[in-house]
Length: 524
Image (cartoon, rainbow, N blue to C red; front, top):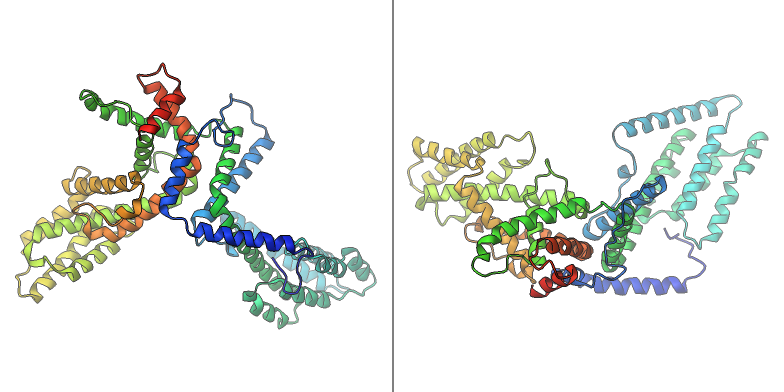
């Protein structure tokens, strides 16, 4: 974190580095969804004999504790870098730096005990300063952690003023000035903090005379400054990771794979099940003279399409998708609700017909109402059938109001019962309206995944899905962005897995697996 009044002693290299980052940021900001797809295709079809791209395989081995720790560190770095890259709003706040649950309770109790002991020691006659000295030592380390490597003058000053040996001598001679040290700490914090914390520093300078309360507030503001420093580092890393994040994440995953060779087991099972499904579907085509073995891109695209209907309660995600699990689940939940909304609207307009056709305002009101009432339908405790009964009642009220306003007769009790029954029937998996909507949604996403320019097709929703077109376009853009970035990072790993699976399944098993896979890639 740069100081307000101090700069590193050597600035020329820093300026050059800053200009490089700025230029790289400009280049990366111009990247589009199409370029992501090109990158993913290049990654998938690249020469897998490359040392940096080929997923290495090794025989089973015993993993030491140090290797486990290194792997955990690689996994943490991979997760953080991925979050910074794909989440534009990613940041750290003060509360996220603290533990949650039981650890937070323990931590808070320990802190309370510490402050109580400090207050008791300072109120003794004569005062005791053992806890206060520990406190000052911790504050010194925090302040030093905020400094740039070149801030030598400020570093020397902090070390001299907060010299623990000197403070102990002052305590022994009853000459220590705790309030003076607190004042210096606050002034130093004011030089280091971001402008947004100036008001907090001002409040510290106006704090009450109670020294314990003052130090508690100092630590609170230091926590805020820690979060600011982390967010500053994240902001600085964004343009770098935007350009080099693919290579960095791939290298981190390769390190994990080197240490834990079975780190692609779930990914392999995922690809294998998709290939088996495609092969079983291709048997009738084989009789027509078409090749029975699907191409690598067909396998990969079908695998990603399956993620939209993934059962998270029964199966863990493939290892290569774990960093996006929360985002993928959110897309699935929003997609399920959009599908349900569309199904209900189709039932309404097909049942009532002419009297409510050509009324976009009514359609929008119904859509918003259904969407609100079905919010949270992904939760295990959500009773969909009961909620749909409530939805049906609200719909009938809204329809009757609209019909009577335009001098149409209200819905008869029999028609209301029929409408309610049809709406509630979408809970059944074999419901024809539900099946139709789900199939067309999958067709829409399949077209996006397979198209080299998916942005063009975002607004081209299949017939019958116009009511949720904005939602589908938004979810489609999010999903395709995640898929293309994932392909770019893990393309070589996918290529290696699919090559081996195709070699086992291909009738041309006599050929080397790499040649067979490359032929299939070329055909796509």
